Amino acid sequence: MHIVQHLEELHKRIIITFLVFLLFLVMVFVYVQDIYHVLVRELPFKLALLGPSDILIVYFMIASVVAIAATIPVGAYQAWLFVRPALTPKERKVTIAYIPALFILFVLGISFGYYILLPLVLHFLMSLSNDMFHTFFTTEKYFQFLLHMTLPFGFLFELPVVIMFLTSLGIINPYRLQKIRKYAYFILIVVSIVITPPDFLSDILVSIPLLLLYEGSVSLSKFVYKRQHRAKEGNKDAYESI
Image (cartoon, rainbow, N blue to C red):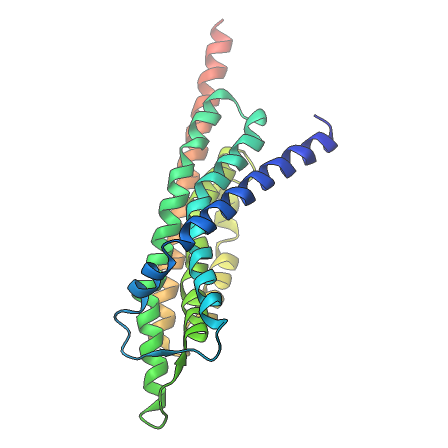
């Protein structure tokens, strides 16, 4: 295929993914009020509205996150269709198995942010007031805060599957990942410090899972790389015996 054909194919895959996202967005809006009540039912404070459009913005944020999660398998499948012509039949079977894992890890990342990080950060920030201020949270500001504490982890938890996929394509290998380990650690620790309150405990609780994710990604990359290497050696021996 020429470069123009590749771009046309890529454009087609992006359009399909975007249309599926819009479809899920509309479908989620039907149940967005129920999702909203689930998210706020255990809050120790009441949320306030400053304008009639605030609740619509909040509903859109909730629906967008759910629609993104639902669209991930479709987007991953479209990406797989785009690179499929460059893969061997065996590589096609292996890489398509990553698609369900992308969705599962995204949900796990969101859950980590919501059930572990969010209560920790919220408790710390609330403790800073020390009864000096009247607590007043607007619905829009709270859900923006909720989004910042959860959505990044949904994407960060995709790291192992992305690394395995790129290793399968031969773009990276575990030995390169090991060489850049100290730089990766530095970036992940900086990310954890930026998205958490300025206390040592929060930084540790977020940094450790991110570093474990990276090490897990390296191990999975090594597994895929060695398996590919053994397969190539087996094919080479079979060819030489002929």
